[in-house]
Image 1 (cartoon, helix red, strand yellow):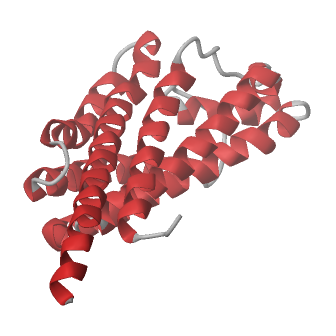
Image 2 (cartoon, helix red, strand yellow):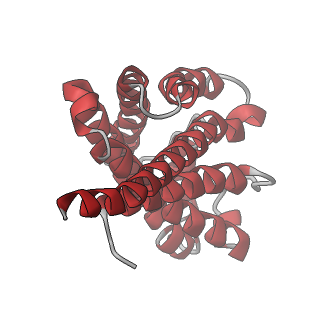
Length: 226
């Protein structure tokens, strides 16, 4: 198989779709997080999948941006960079939750509970140092990046506009849900996850159509050259 920009973009679309699906799936039946549950195999596996989700999402949004650089403009570049930073921070903090917190929980459960309180929007009193600032920056980048990048994709009129609009408003929806009772916390991933699935499928289908059109046009071009 010949590697082409169109095929790379189509692969990025599939990555975005997988990321959105994982983001939603991880939340279904998610156990309550505390110093005890983070040591269980189930939570470790879920956190590991969330790390994979962040990596796939980063590949997906990179493909969305690079496949239509000119149409995205400056707004698209700024939105992409901020959203990418959000996913990079999410990947890093979740990796810490996967490999570090289970070990620390055995000796310092108070610290672990403090980190989990901050990352899940609960009120905590433990001193967790710089993790508070990291979590705040991650949240701002995730929400602001999604808003700006979603608007840029909507204006570009290349990918599914409904999915782009959902990506833009998902930050506002997430902020509202974060202010509601704990029962709603796991719903935070759904708007962004659905948007990523829609945008990923749109990118994949669009690139497949482009590849097919170029393949059909190639024999005609060769014949004309003769």
